[in-house]
Amino acid sequence: MPLHTRHFELEEARSLLKSIHPDLSRLVELKRKLNSKNYDVYRHQYFGGAGPNGTGQYPPELDELVTVVRSMAEKGILVKGLDDGLIDFPHIKSNGEEVYLYYKLGEEDILFWHPVQSGFAGRRSTNQL
Image 1 (cartoon, rainbow, N blue to C red):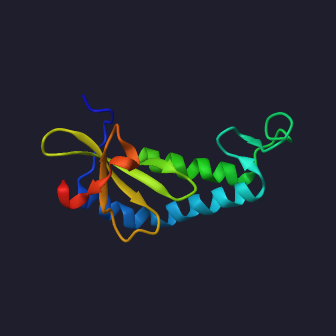
Image 2: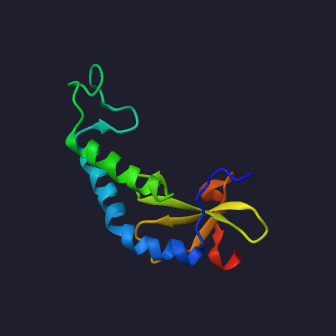
Image 3: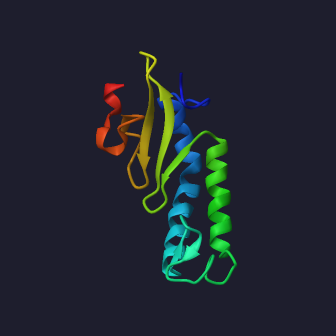
């Protein structure tokens, strides 16, 4: 049974990539800004800060980052890396195996896929789909 309810054909993911590219770039930019403020987005606190967020308030960049991630999730896209703009598109191969079409910001296209369990280390060329 598949893990995801939404799956993409390769050409569909490639087409969608064009429209979400600005959002993906923005995610990386927001993460860099939060890093420069020593804000840990994964723990929702400032590095070395006392208590939640050091001050008890979330930086405005975090709110925007969450909004962009939610927008992508609503489309069925999995955000895997905020620092490098890494995303996956769930895909069902012709043999019924659920895999991820892999894209990293800066690459020219969706060039790789990987089995759900293996992650980046198991990536293979989309020519092998």
